[in-house]
Length: 202
Image (cartoon, rainbow, N blue to C red):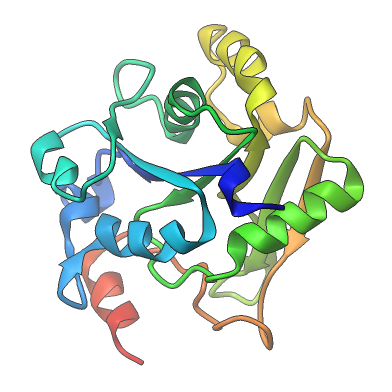
């Protein structure tokens, strides 16, 4: 898949409730805001990029890419960021990454794209081992066709909020990640400041 066919969106629109209500995307990770780290990791993999944020918009705009708030009110969750990305992008594909998983693979989009094309899928979603060693889907790491915008509008406006309930309606391929090809912590996300500090260490 040609990177120019993909727009990437960094999801930084959450409440940060498990981090004390701070704006998680602006927390420091190895000297830069978490969301900027994610953006810089994603940009070489895509043709265009943007950020989804709901507060401190000027800080996010300083990253130099378009910033879009949730398409739904009241912190409706990641699907609201998916929706904002689909509404604002004009490429055939959108890829979503969260701001709080700073070590995600630098070939994430390539591998999701290869799987989607191989299987004729509308959605490619990562799976990876978590801290307990169990392989689980990582639904916020998602590559999806732009044509799914209408479906997502219907689902969310009908009150749907869970990513897997929506993706189950479409041809979805699950793409396994994990060692030895990937850093063991590639999909570990930081829900607390202590977890964030731990991810800074080699």
